[in-house]
Image (tube, rainbow, N blue to C red):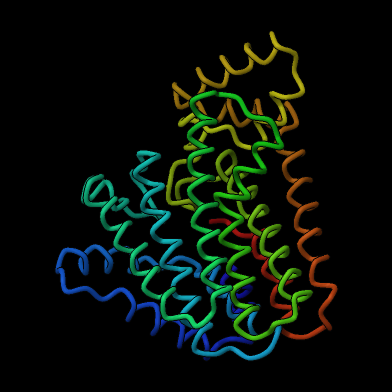
Length: 325
């Protein structure tokens, strides 16, 4: 997998270094506790997937420039901020295999650090010279919040259909992927056809990314995910495999099935739960949907000529399909 990520990054190698410099310099603070927590957060690097998409999209449409690096940096800062807030909302103890910020420094400070990172993203936003970029980022912030609240509403109501599920993951996850591609594109072109194509590519890729995470929740392990398998199930979050199974049953069957999965989750009997979901066809359906949406993403790139950049974006779809974390 590391080799595939290297292949994706090859066309933007030097620019990734410039992004890293911009990213780290953007996080500096005069407050020691902030610097301590930020160093803890960035020590365990993620895949930097969204900044890579931003840089690749910019290069697909023209040339990467200073504004591209600023936007790529603020997108990663926004992503980290949302992860911190997610961990507070979800009562998560682990993130990327390490104790979460909320576990180490408790919820109050975690929320404040998340807010600090959001403010840093806003500061970077002010450094862009594009009104269009500011509008996209403002819309992104709204979608991210809506997605989080919709997920909480889903947990409270304990029911969700597939249409609502895709609305939730589009706002909560895909919006940041879409904005990464769209913002990268507008830093190097004004061609609306190309901008819209990359925005749609990012949206579908983001949906596929969340669907892959849904599969991890049932099939993965703590070694791969940095959190226990079955975590979302235990938190009563209905993922796509479960939604598919539940929505094909009648009212009585739904109630019985929900009782069964609730008991298995409470008893941490994820082996039986996994077998149940597989036997009911939840995994097969979700894997087919994952491939279908990945193909929709790839089709958005047809407006571009073949190139090493286009190949890298297509490989990002393959990376998502094959990743184990």
